[in-house]
Every structure is written in structure tokens, then in C-alpha cells.
Image (cartoon, rainbow, N blue to C red; front, side, top):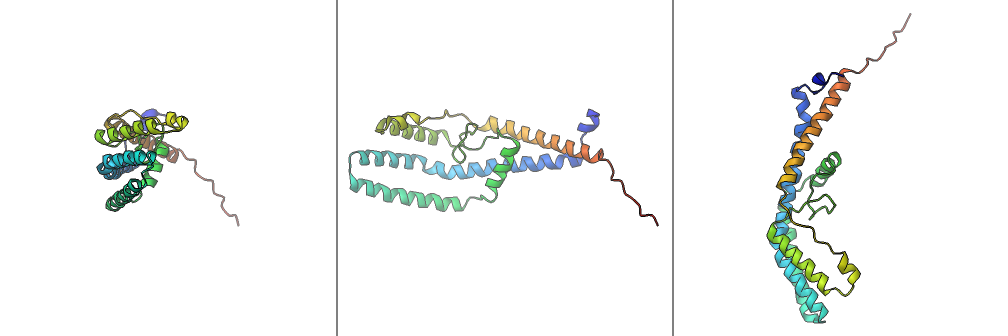
Length: 195
């Protein structure tokens, strides 16, 4: 195999990498849009959850009912805002991209996994971490309480950019393989009918 010919740039070889890169950008941009809706309400819902846990622990049923009503109104508000976000094909695109690049940084908020990253703002992360700690402290079942782990916050920019580059390079390599096999394919032998 001649590596120079194999890797030689050709405009057709860039079609697949560009498509994969655009899919990746779409997944990341859509994920940020979806997470931004939750971001607006994270601290509010975290505070409601803490009040609910305290009220339930103290057996204050009237407060629990009022908090449930407020939580339902907030959930409805989030649902309405999510309807305005373009989510067409995000799940399918995310599956395709993460199949080609298993380390692709999907948001932990939408797809929890060992390789996910946090797309939420630092403020929202702090509210959720505070809620997780509060929940751990107030749980009677210590086995469950000990199982609550809080992932460390880090900026998502670098892993996303690195994976964009990886997806593009991987797409180019796949294109090169396709063109190599297409070029070196053996022609089919045809049998001519004899009279």
C-alpha cells in the first residue's frame, strides 16, 4: 500500500469528515441549548427539593403539598421552554457520533456515563452539588446516601474541541479506506454467452 496515495487529499475525501464534524457540532450545540433551559431553573428546583426533603422529614404535609404544586408549575415551565429548542435528530446524531467516537463528550445532564462532561454552568453545578450534599446528610438509608457521588466540575471546551478534531480525522481515515478499496477492487469477471 502506498501511504502517500492512500492519504493524498481529494475533495471527495472531505465529504464524510465534514458531515461528521457538522453532526458533532449539531449535537454539542443542541445539547448546550437543552441544558441551558434546565440551567435557568436548576437553583430554583434545587431549593424546592431541599425544602421538600426537610418538610417531608418533619412530616409537614401542607408544606409538602404546596411544594409539589410549585414543582409541577416549574416542570411545566421547563417543558414549555424545551418545546422552543430544536431537538430534531439530536438523539440519533448523538448515537452515531458516540458510536464512531466512544469518548465523545456527551452531557452528563442528558446521558450519564463515565466519559460524559458537565455542560451546565458553574452556578447550576454548585446548586446541584449543594442539593446532593444536603440529600446525603438527610437520608436515613446510609447505603444509598454513600452511593451518591458528585462529579468534579470542569470546563467542557477542551474535550469538545479535541473530539471535534478526532471525529474529523476519523472521518477522513474512513474516507481514505473507502477510496482505497474502491480503487483496488477487482473487476468482476463476466462470462460471455457463446452461440
